[in-house]
Image (cartoon, rainbow, N blue to C red; front, top):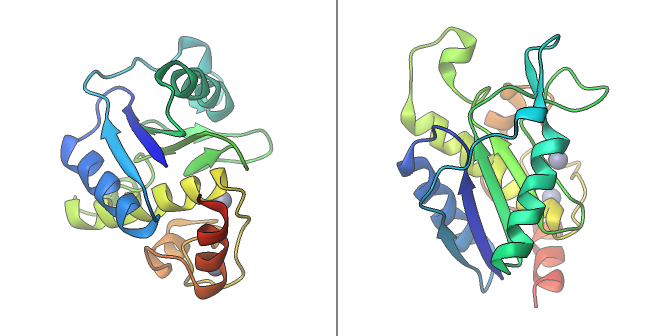
Length: 179
Ligand SMILES: [Zn+2]
Ligand SMILES: [Zn+2]
């Protein structure tokens, strides 16, 4: 499985590398590349009344990029506040199954919760959300095991509770779905 990591706007390069390395360690037979250029966030995605970005609009852009680059999966990494219809906010979104996924660092940063910056914690959270969303692209649903990376995160505490890997059940699903 070939995965392209696509940075949108300003995103730390070291976090992109951590994401790529972690994806390669949990998904069998996976290779990744990181796009050098920073893609601008599609203007139409911004909702001024919510002061948030519509995740679905950006996801379609990523899908186009995946097709153009002829990769199996494309993961967008952003640093803006994302929403989806009927949700106050989301950490990320993916086609389930499909080839496009995205995560945002915006609500993963300790600063968002009034805490001092912590790059290590930010990386840990980004890695978990990235694995989670790429898991969805393979068709995996949410897992009831709160420690499994496929557990749904309603708030950041639930992200912190997860391990950056699959439970036994999800692990075997991944093995079955990756050829
Ligand atoms: Zn999910
Ligand atoms: Zn699981």
